[in-house]
Image (cartoon, rainbow, N blue to C red):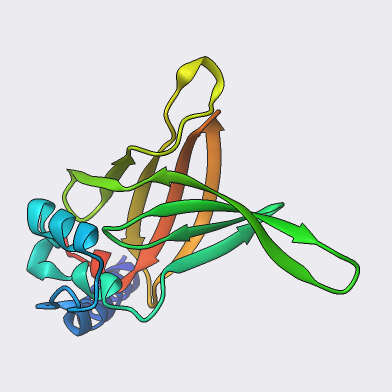
Length: 163
C-alpha cells in the first residue's frame, strides 16, 4: 500500500510539472479570428493551459484507416480522405466535423458542433473530445460511434490537473 501511495504521489508530481509548462498560456496572435473568438467565449481551461495547444505550430492529426483526422484547438475539426496510390499517398476531399466549441466538463470534455451535413437522416456532423493527461499533445483514439458523430481522445499536458 505504501508503494502504491508513493507511486501515486510521483505521478501527480509529474502531472504538475507537465501542466506547469502550459499554465498561463495565451492564444497565439496568428490564430484565426474564429478560433480567437471561440477561445474568448469559452476560455482556455484552468490556468488557460489549453491555449498552449492552440499556440502549437500545427494542428493535431492522426490517420485511421482511409481518413486523416485533424483537430485545430478552438478551430475546426476535419476528416480528410486519403487517396493511396502505388507509391504515394495524397489528401482528398475534406469534411468539416465541427467548428463551434464548448466545454461540457472543465478541462476534460468539449463538444464541437456545426459540421457539414450530408449525413443520414439530416444529422449534422459533430464531435465529443475527451482530454486526458499526457506528456505531449496527440490524438490517441478516434471513433465514429454513430454515423457523423465522432469521439476523440486527446492526450495533453494541459489536462494534467490534480482533482
